[in-house]
Length: 595
Image (cartoon, rainbow, N blue to C red; front, side, top):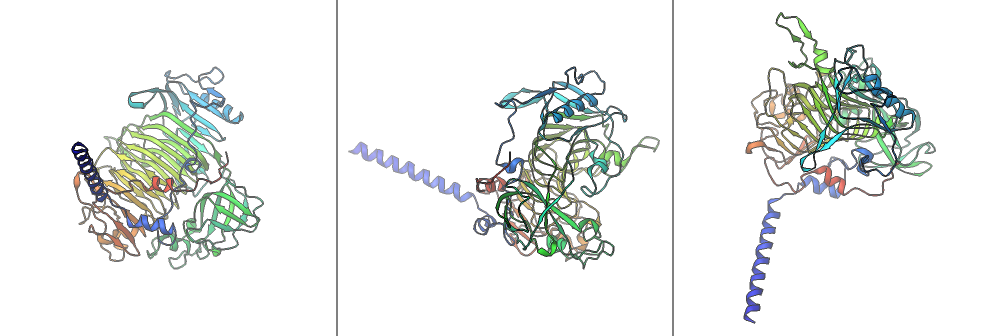
């Protein structure tokens, strides 16, 4: 009995210690209030947005595992004599690879396989670029297995000369064919043709998914569609900051000023949202797969259009490299020793590009290394695409990932080794996009070429986007005054570790996480209100490398006002390290998706 008593006492002591340790561990974690409010009220009014459906097939299905697929997928080997690509021979391979892509398209889809080696793309200005215009085409390189399950990329697409010097527009404002930035190593170019399918008959408030329409006969559950809205107040011929409706809602409580001519002008007259239909309920009602991200008033004449872009396209397991020689200067030409222009500013900023994606959905980009490029990957007018396991390496350049007029794009695990001006950039009405688990491998700003470890918002009010569980980033937004504010409402910055050095738009607030060059037009005209250019933004669990201090609004205090929500600055141990994953784990499993 004495032995049993001693054993019991030991067990009780161990249990007590375990419970105490668990309690202390639990106590060290903290749960943001904004998360609890979201669980209670959902993405309504001024609560957190819902980000549960970003990515390929809204994250409800995995990216196809082609290597282990049981289905017989036709393979188009670019080195086959029918196509004639030869790696490592220094001759241009663009036409040969394009013929394999076209053959796959004509066959209804397939794998365009590039055996290991280097393939020359656009070796001279007379050669072309690779383009994908059909569904279900996967361009795939060869890999070898490395240590710890890593993949060693053995196939390289090498860009030999810069893209065509066509005109550069605001992304998404002209057809892709007219936009100079689409001349990249490989471009996904879906049809931009649309057809009106039906119209709303009743306003829909933020957070709601049910829509009443004139007729549902042209709609199907699982369809991807475009919902388009017109601002009833904007007069493109006589734009005025006092005659604006949608932009005013999506930048509230910021007061627009006369200099912001594009924000309340022609380019903002009509905006769109790419979304899926979860269910057709009856002849006059549908359920959207995502809740409305702002109030869809009937005065905006909301109408549902067909989305006719490409689907099921993949680009994977590739090195994308170029002959870019370096010496980058942001928006400036590269001059020789004689003072003459060697490379124009346009070439340096835009014409050494890796991947362009326009009018595409339910597609993916994975296991890609961008090396010695000044522009990595651009998404325009696209939705529900996953881009993961990306690496940006080599010489300094302009931009890594750029998202414009796109929705539901998931950027997951992007590592930035090369110094870029805009590692991640959002612009032009982009919404519902998720950037998560990304990391910079450099610190501090280079004043010579303006490269920095930053999140960029570039104007025309991108709204309700999530930056989540990231290391080495702070906010240094750009864009000219005409497209200000840099961003729209309710962007979320969650569990982000800021870099040690934050000197963008240097001012007296050296530790400030959110910056702008235009704080003179904020309510106080002082640096303390720079955050107003991130209206209704959420800053939760922001810390800093090396244990340094980070501030929002000049201090470290929690805030809840009409401008922003701030919780847990410089506080470790957030109980929800990834808002995206927590959103995703709680979403409904019954959403219907078309294969």
